Length: 242
View (cartoon, rainbow, N blue to C red):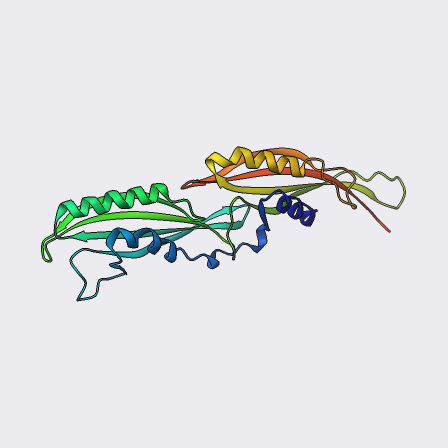
């Protein structure tokens, strides 16, 4: 049934994967960070530390931490946390750069979700520089080719009914529950839920004895502009001894 569900979701325009295929190590958010910040500092952005000949107005970033968004034991997304420092010998240019960064993060609409989770300013006396520090979080899908809207599919539970035969043979109805984890922007979630319901409700497979029925749903996580929502579907199949 999983393959049938994946095909039905792909047909609706929702890019779907098996949850077991997700691999957070595939994610690389550094190019997205550079694209976001480079225009703010005029291309004067460096990782980890500044070179000795760096200009007075610069930016420097470092990766401060990594986490996962996990659903039912599957790590479906990676959350990278960066610390970014903008530097300028004068305060007004620093404020302009900070406002530009905030605006660019708010307007970002790529596959990664970026948000500013903390900010502070200070003054460094030795080089005589004003500094603005930002904590940036990037949420990315743990797939080789990320796409939105997305769905991850995996088996969730299996429940066996009683034996229906009074002989030495066995015949049982198995109720299978499948999770469909939707990943979409807040504004798009309801539309994607409706599209998935239209694609999956009543779906049948040759080895099933009942079609897919809706079993409920719940929000799993919110990270930046992305919402992770799990829909649950059930169907029945028959097993018997030979």
